[in-house]
Image (tube, rainbow, N blue to C red; front, side):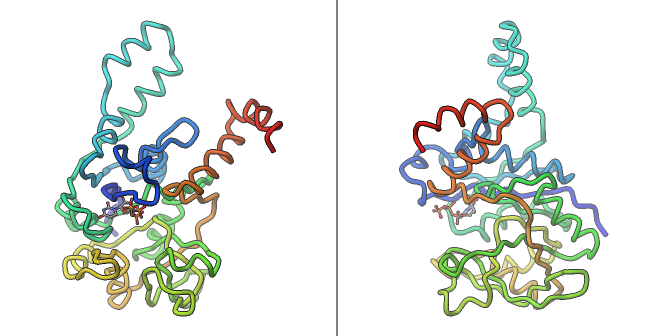
Length: 287
Ligand code: UTP
């Protein structure tokens, strides 16, 4: 089995569900407590041993590049002011990973964004992570997927159970249960109506693929919403070789929407070792 080192972060979407906040700032830079979403995503990938990062960005996304770049002046200021904790926080971010940036010139869909990264994949297995899906657990979501990839050598996607009223927002899978608790995916449908949904298990932004996925993606035509859908390529892959699903453990927030973002900030704020107690006190009069 080829080693799994690469991970693609598609971050070129328009973020329409979070307008006007995302008009001029990337959705991936929305802050949960004290870090932007994209940093949570990169930290999760690194904790899962995936340290070759390919970020797919587009117009108006320069702040992502700046965030992972060295800011010499800021670092020097913090150092000379003796602000060692802040200095460490800032310098760690710029040194945590090597990141390659690829431009998606038009937002033609998630599948197209992944395809834009294909020159960097070189026939290797790779992860894909959507940073606006924030998943928090001691065992990082990407590590949960990686364990299945290493046990099977097959592609694997992260799943969560969603209520019927929400299936129209997600890619929903059809599956058969196999030995050892694995779910083998037979098909998937992008944003189905509740009556057409094959299950209530939704794909939620964490994937590991064999290189065959890239080959199939090249032939995917624009589907639902006129976009090149990653889901269509996964469905084609599942007809060709086993693709597994993993029910992800952890707290999950759809932080690319105002509602999920608020929940993430409230819950992770209350749990935060430095800010949790003060935040709880401050909220008392309001609840
Ligand atoms: P979303 O479905 O969340 O779309 O994309 P979006 O445009 O970001 O946000 P909404 O739905 O308009 O509010 C899922 C992921 O795929 C990326 C997004 O950046 C996000 O990480 N994406 C989507 C691209 O990189 N390019 C695209 O053309 C579409």
